[in-house]
Image (cartoon, rainbow, N blue to C red; front, side, top):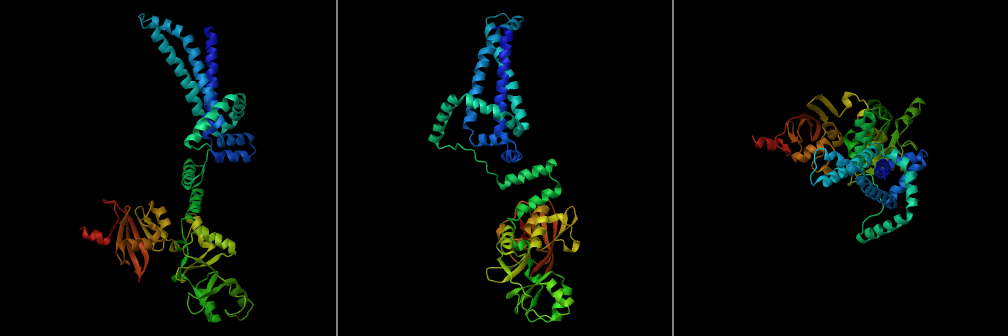
Length: 445
């Protein structure tokens, strides 16, 4: 065989090897979600790639047969074709007994380097840049090769299946996306500029609905404005004027005996018509939806949807009313910091780079997001910042009591009876990694 024919054959083998390498990496690295999107857009080749990913045995058998055959042929053709020319080069500076061996080694290295660079590394890098595009472009030729080599494919595939079965190894690809992977994809999209900052926050808040429970979003018991069944018309009007809410609970004697709720617009209609009314009037008080305080916000949404209600009374295990929650409360959690609120209604107010004023009822998830804290000790036992302080101190705090945790000082600055109204949070360099309370810190002085 002439040197020209040998080089043409080597070049052909490199092209075949590059094609197989590119097909192997692109089909293996293609993302299932992206392929499904392409399939919905009408790309039939995307369906073929998905089918190969689900049953990759025949495909990889064809690839390995081709790559190994090309590698062997490359060695058979390349080394004899290059060795005489390498001998001429080596003879210019060496004519000793190792001339043939050195010439053979140099031709071997040249052929190997050529195959590694142009038949392996470059095709695989190109396939990794856009795996889905490469996969849909190469899947038809690969299916044709699979048909041509069917007898060999059947033999090797049957043998490999028998070995897999013998050792109990999985043979079908299962691609399960975890929540952490979705979070990572969203973060990557935000960093790459594909997602706007607002979109990133919104998606993160959607996932938080499952980890946040009713107490973190509800109106607390002490803040509920309610009517008693025997309240006069004047008392009802004055409460609506003082507290312009859309709905009010109606109770019999105390807040733990809830009869239902009234809609302010129903009262307003009667007032505008000049009609007298009483809470005992038929049709004025609506039946309430009651939910336990152990539900997460996703479950609250599902319960409201099933009952066609947008207000629920939150009850604890002792059948005591601990709060109320509306669809608006859940929406506020979902929107998070995308909504601008008056400063007096904000639970977290940043004073400067290293200090914040926080409401005691601030949900821990909001505190974690604001301060970039990964986790709190035993977070199952409490939902709010006040709960965290009491858990750490093991008591109801007094003014100036504080907790040192994760590089922050949480100091109680506004206490009303047993209620923690406000805390001052400051950043500092914590020498010890363990949490400290004001009592422990004083003992170390």
